Image (cartoon, rainbow, N blue to C red):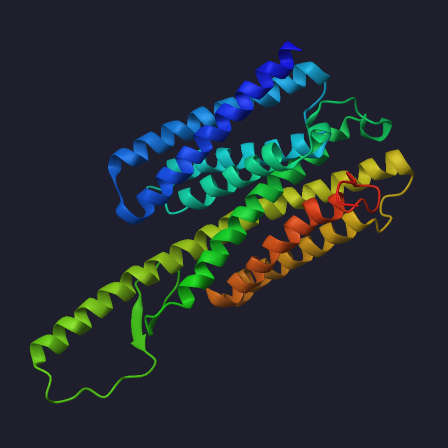
Length: 318
């Protein structure tokens, strides 16, 4: 019983802190206040420790890695987003990814705590098929890949939203070189406008487009890095899952709905990497492929499981 109370303390404290950190990051995204950076970073560290405390407590309670049901998997996914937040803050001084990761960690945490039935949040012993040394390898690598791929796809969605902005100019260049700015449609400039106004307006427009192009290149770079890492983990997860399935069910691949959607997700991200690496499509083309992966990951992770279809299911919706 004491484990239950300790778990609840860790869960609800981390939920409250994640809410505050997300709010601070959204405020800081618009106003860029240095003190907010400090508070949000320390808050996320504390939330990360609380989520780690929950997973550790559940481990001692169940005597196995806390990945045996949907509630534990969601908490581990929230833990993964928090971990990525802390890593990104070390490498990224501009903190552009902080609102995305903080919001993701909060929403996943909230879904686990507020939406799942109480019975699904209880600790339970593993079914015989899950009592294997492959549990840590397969489930942990798959969930880490989900967190990283979702992060990369969310960045791609942000990138697509920038392409639909009001500014008409665009930039051409690679991820490291300087940018060349061109205008798609040069408007007719009336001779009645003073030259000074025209020059100031052009300089201001060029400055805005410079900021926009820098942001586009950074988001494209981070999307590629995140998806490359997540794709590697997903590949390991699929391979280890096939080996585990052969031990448990006597077949490496049975076209179970979970396996099928995992393969579709893997193929979509493989297409993104192929486009991004070979054809050098920086920006909109590759971002559209990456954004599709966001929905596929959620279908693979939750859609198939909650519908109660196949061998990988929790049977909640039907």
